[in-house]
Image 1: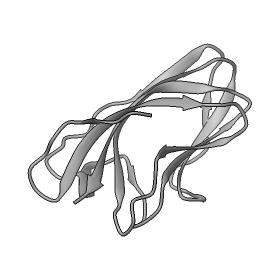
Image 2: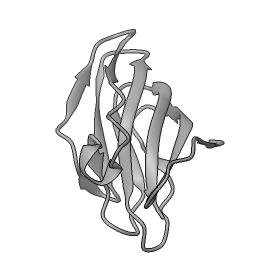
Image 3: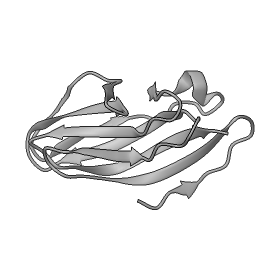
Image 4: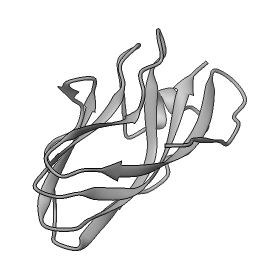
Length: 117
């Protein structure tokens, strides 16, 4: 996944990246950065068949299990980027990857995230 830097003043740098998750797998949406937290600012994605997805900080769930219908998807709208530390949908602990676990479905889309400077 190639990330695009969006730039942001202050303690965080904003990026966007493609989401390509295989069925029945855990995929690193954003690789761990030593000593840095990752904040999910927005996500849009679709599933090829009915299934579920869960966002994780490393191996720890930071979202509930979210059902996705067959050939459908959902949007987590972009949060205001004034302070990703408090405005993101969820955030990893320092040094953990932002992961997505799928059950049954493939999940593809795009996300916007911030990494603590």
